[in-house]
Amino acid sequence: MATYKEIRGTQIEAVASDPSNPVEGQVWYNTTSQSLKGQAATTAGSWATGNNMNDSRTSIGGAGVQTSALGFGGYGDSQGVTESYNGTNWTEVNDLNNARVYAAGAGVSNTSALAIGGYATTPRAYTESWNGTNWTEVNDLNTARFDLSATGTQTSAIAAGGATPPSPRPTNSEIWNGTNWTNTGTINSGRSGLTAAGADSTSALIFGGTDGTARGYTEVWNGSNWTEVNDLNDTRFGLGGAGTATAALGFGGSAPGNTANTELWNGTNWVEQNNMNTARRELDGCGSNPAALGFGGYATAASAATEEWTGAGGGVTRTFTDS
Image (cartoon, rainbow, N blue to C red; front, side):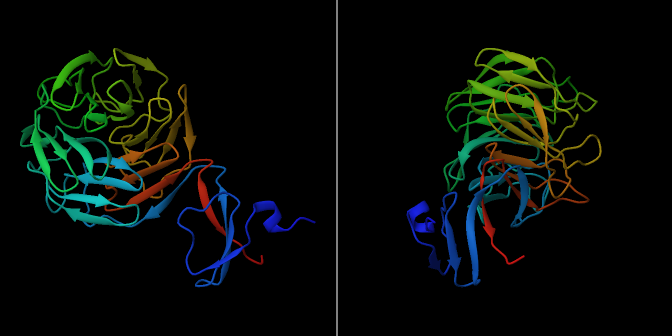
């Protein structure tokens, strides 16, 4: 019979703490917890509870990935508060220059992000750029709006939808080139409380929202036009989103009651997944389909809850037991 070393190429190591980047099939003995552990792959996606934010808040904006995220604005102790997430803990950093709620975010990490639009007594067109230390005011949106969707990077983003009361909900979308916003194609259904996923200003997905009624509308952006595609299974608004135009995740929201529902977009259809641990609305999210982050929102009150999503096929550490 082949030994473990012959199969895997290494011996079972005795270590004081779990490896930081174990590979599937790796096995080790943790001398601190006195347990035998191994790395496996998940067969179905699920949410795990992470460490709370420092400030409970709802109607929050966010950007980044699961291990390097930023949360900003929203109703809480202060509407300008910004927190940075390193994959384990949230740390308060410098505030927004313009405190506001219902802003949208774009960006790839906790050192490179945009805060877009929002509400502060009236709809705002503010855009602020984050460099890892400070927010800097840059050129405004063409249309002041709040409760909008946005996705992309600090130099290539797209914003769409939102609210501009008492006017009808705007249908125009705008693309950001790192310096200016330019009006581009119109979305098919004007709504607020929607969310977005996408890599940059040439490829995006928007979904959910309300035009007075909760909607499951989904639209895909190809760099020139918005096209309606298959709806969410559960209509809702105030939801979180993560991923790309072909592999996205939608979670939480209001339909109109708070929901923990999670759905996966495979490029053609939405597929129901395991629910979040805490049902809530007006949260935000970031990251990818296999590794997303959901934070903040409103459950029975403003929430500081953080949840981490690991999709099917994602790595997970298992502890071996006698039973």
